[in-house]
Length: 242
Image (cartoon, rainbow, N blue to C red; front, side, top):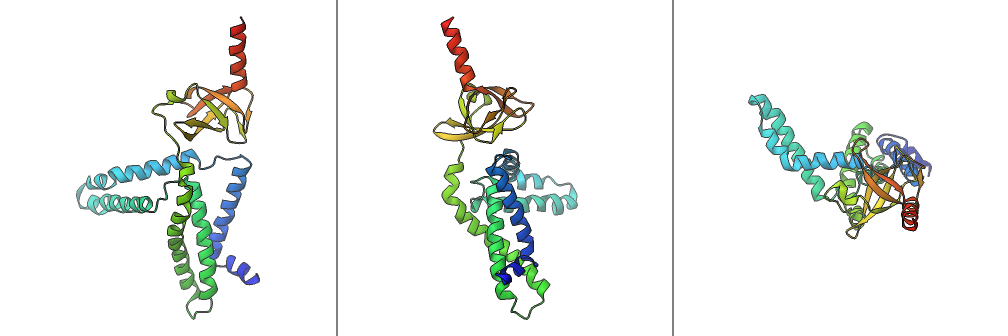
């Protein structure tokens, strides 16, 4: 145990140990509902960037001005497209980016710890060996993460509405700790799949598990507005009695 602790707190494993601590804190906040699981902004930015690279990366790189452009933008576009193809082939875009990063850190930490237990006995410069192990642990973590996430990919497959108006009038269930005017997510059953959407309410905050009705789309807050289901049903009942 003491040897494991020593390895965890020395280079290169200490890099992954620090990142592992960040990951654990993040998931602790997810459990208590303080942050979004697989932040839609982060996932959207990554997916958008990768999609753009897939579609335009090499082409955009070709629009270079002179030799410098060919060597710079063209090469960058080709490299970015290559990286995007790697992500696609490893199926690392089938789950939220936060899940992918968390698993990469966990597996990299395990590989680094294992490698350093054997490498410590080798007559090689420690910093050179540490750098090599740091790189190899990340390389080995990628395919293992790819295999680990594939069985769970279907749980993160969300249906996509054609427009925001398609969801107006739908019933949703709060999935975060609360929903207020600045924060919140809810789940909508759309076309047989669970669709996770950002929601906001201007009145009394909603709690996890409560049901609400989607009443509109707020472009300024980039989220749907909702009202408690009980309030909407109560108003409908009163109008019928009148």
